[in-house]
Length: 412
Image 1 (cartoon, rainbow, N blue to C red):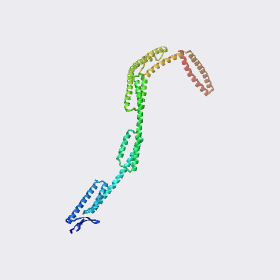
Image 2: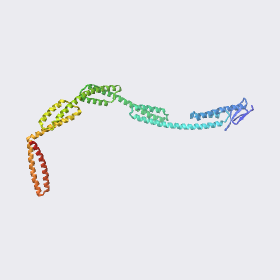
Image 3: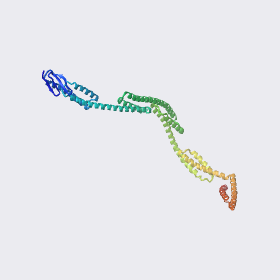
Image 4: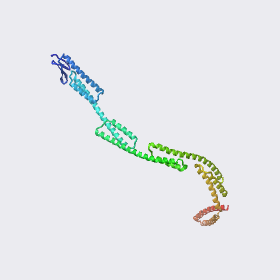
């Protein structure tokens, strides 16, 4: 075979060897023994076109972002090997140039991806540290109900985050896990103690309910009301009993309490009607008693008051809010009668009258003596002695006036 074929990208030698031209020189890509050389050259060109199509498709997939950067890097390397060893005739250098361009794009994207990965890991590290810190705060707290849900949320957040380097991830996980374990242990202990307290509360509240039931029909309104208040104070101080008995015990206690206070209120309502009628009667007696004032005859006033008090006592009790008012009005009349009796006794007492007479005599003698001293001081011109005698004389005259008034009362 002596025929040849040739174009700008390759040739078929006269021995049937097919060459491709590249920047590095010619490279043998195959041989052709049958048929015309032009057909051979066209065949190897079609093979080039298939490779060029693969490069173009790869470029489209890379530029569109369909391929991940690492997958794209492997695909470019694979396609480069295909081009470098391609048994095809065409512009293989342009395909290698295109692959160089694509490799730069992939390299940039791989760098960007590494930076993004680094940023994500930094964020994950900060987030995990924050989760561990919050877990430690929860572990030291006493939020026994909300804390459980929050720990569950924190665990879900942790699982959604990427792993860090082993040392850092293990350290942060140990902090979180230890805090969760400590919280769980303390929570179990808390509820165990709470259950024990609730059993103690159950015993106390059963005793309270039983005592309340024994008091429900009592008619000792005051003491029993006080006892119910004390039972209520003990109930509140006992804390909650187990849920399955708390409502039942409360219903027992409340029913006994209601029965007592309903009976008491009905009785007190009846008493209130009676007491208000008594108040009307006592107010009428007060009008009669106050008519004795002012007391002119203590004997008749005493008899009238004694009779009035007997009727007063027979009337009975009045409403609590009116007791002080009516009793104080009656007391004023009583005090006036007693004062009249005491005045009469003092006036008619001979010993008292004699003492008053002696006082009047002594004061008159003292006044006469002071008048002489005053006159003598005036004669001497002794201002100091005159002032002293004058002050003493004024005081004695006031005392004498009071003593003579008391003496006139005895004479009356």
